[in-house]
Length: 273
Image 1 (cartoon, rainbow, N blue to C red):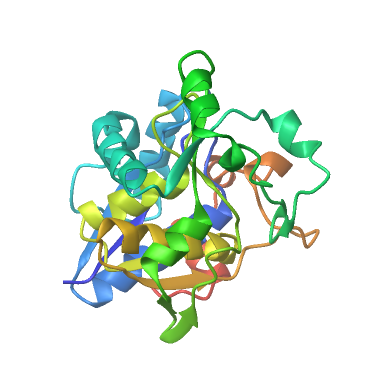
Image 2 (cartoon, one colour):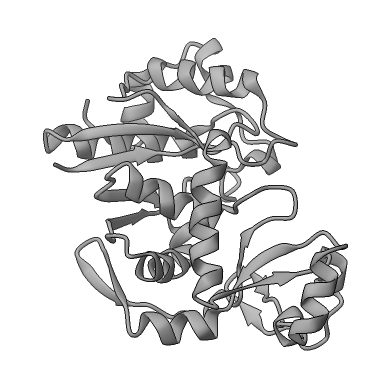
């Protein structure tokens, strides 16, 4: 059965870009007689807020969207993510990283990736004895050793809008899979949860297309089925810039207060109800 999902982070209010992605995922599942699921990606407990979770429910209900199971909360799944991390460590496909953001920003040899400088692999080169000693005293994240992961996984592809795309394991470098302040990162948690919930079709923006290369590698290493992907264009504001929480995109709640209806939202995107 086709299963799609919408997976917002409760770190702010939803805007039109979120509405577009949620409607696309919901309608795809409903047209196929499948399931639509809601996941709350609240791993960042420093920024996640309960009031934003409630606002997500209210906004989606206003849009006329319904979901078929109780929403999954990532903050309650730490043991599941730790088990997956342990499996990657056992494969020698992950290593502890002690670098700060400042260390990485100042690295002169950092290669360039799709979203800026990539991690230069500083901690991957540490001698095992040094790693063990620092792990006992220093806070650390865990990174995917992408060279090792690529060798273990072999050549991979993923399907996007029916097209087969070759995976470039090195596109994003050695990404963080468990943060210093959380038992997982977006990459690992999203991959695990999509598989655990039987998601067959992932609908999300093209801003996450590069992440799919990472997720496909994780799926291969962990023996998980790969869903079909449907990366859609991003919604821009009147200034032509992509709508985002960080640049003050008007929230759906404000549009609702102005008298905008769910039908108006669909009409804006030329989506039938």
